[in-house]
Image 1 (tube, one colour):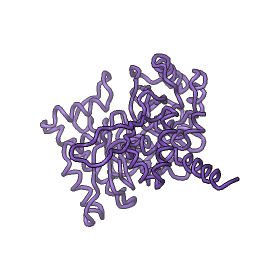
Image 2 (cartoon, helix red, strand yellow; image 1 turned 135 degrees about the vertical axis):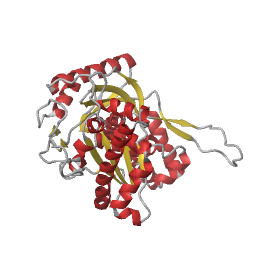
Image 3 (cartoon, rainbow, N blue to C red; image 1 turned 180 degrees about the horizontal axis):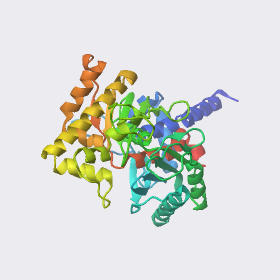
Image 4 (cartoon, one colour; image 1 turned 90 degrees about the horizontal axis):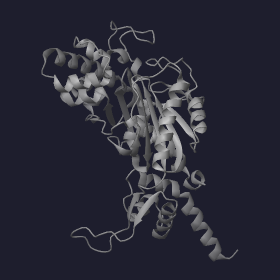
Length: 404
C-alpha cells in the first residue's frame, strides 16, 4: 500500500474514532462551532470537518457553513454545529409513587413530545411498564420519528448487572422485581427498536443535570433530591455516574439525621428518607396530605404560597437543618466540587439558602476551605431526561455501530 493510501486510511480511522466524542460535545453544548470541536478533539481542522460532515450525514447534527459574523469580530466565522432537531429520538419513561410519564427525547436533552401522565401505579410492574411503553409507542407513531432506544427511571436502587429493583419502597412492587427485563420485553413487544435501559431516578437526574443543567462543568458532582416520596442521592465523577460495584452507591436516604426520629423502612430511625421528604414536611407543618395532588406538589405549593405562615416556616427550617446535616456528612466523605438539589430540596434551598449553607459549613470541613457551591437543579423532569441519556449512550459511544 502506498504512503498516500496509508495516510488516507489513518485519517479515516482517526475520524471514525472521534465520531462519538464529537457527538457528545455537540450533544452537551460544549462544541457550538467547528473551531471549538477541533480544539476539544485535538485533531486537524480537516479531520474535524470530516467528523462533523459524517455526523450530519447520519442525521444527528446540523452544520451551518455560512454563519453570520458576530458584531466587531474579524475573520471568517467558524461553522456552527447543533443537534438536528429532525433527527432520531429515544423513548424516555419515569415511574414514581404518584404515577408515570413517557416522552420522546432528542439529542441535546430536548423533549419532542410527552404523553399525558398517569396518576396511579399498579402493584404489577409488568402491567405498569406495559402501559408506559404503550403510551410511548403511540407518541412514536404520531411523530413518525426513528427511535434508537429506550430508558426508564424508577424510584429504587437498581442492582447491576441484573437490572432488578431492590427496594421500590414507595411502590407496591415486590423487592427484586426484574424491571430492566420487563421493560425490555415490553419495548420489543411494542415494536420499538433499540436497546432498553433502566436506572435509579436520582442517578439519572444527576446525569441529566451534569450534561445539560446545573451540574455542567463540575468534576465531582453530588446530587441530592426528594422524589414524590423519600430522598435519593447520586455522584457524577468526570462525566460518569459513580454507581459502585453493583449499582447501589449513594443511597443517601439512609443517613441518620435524627437518631430519635421516625422509624424508617430500612429498619433504622431518623433517616433522611423519612425526615426530609415531602411527607415529612407536610407532617412537620401539621398538614394532612390530600389524595388529589402528589405529595411533592402539595409540599411545593405550601412552601411557595405559605412561607410567611409561622408553622410552615418552622417546618421548613426543621427540614433544612436535617438536610444540611446530611449534606455535611456527604461533603466530608466525598469532597464534591458542586452540590445540586432537586425536588423539595430545591425549593428549600431557594426559600432560605443562607440557612442551609450555614448548616453545611458549620458541620463540614468545607467551611474552612472556601466552600462548595450549592445550587438548585434547573431541568424540568430531569429524571426523564436522564433516562433518555441512558438510551442515547450507545449512540454517543459509537454512532456508526448504533445506527447501522
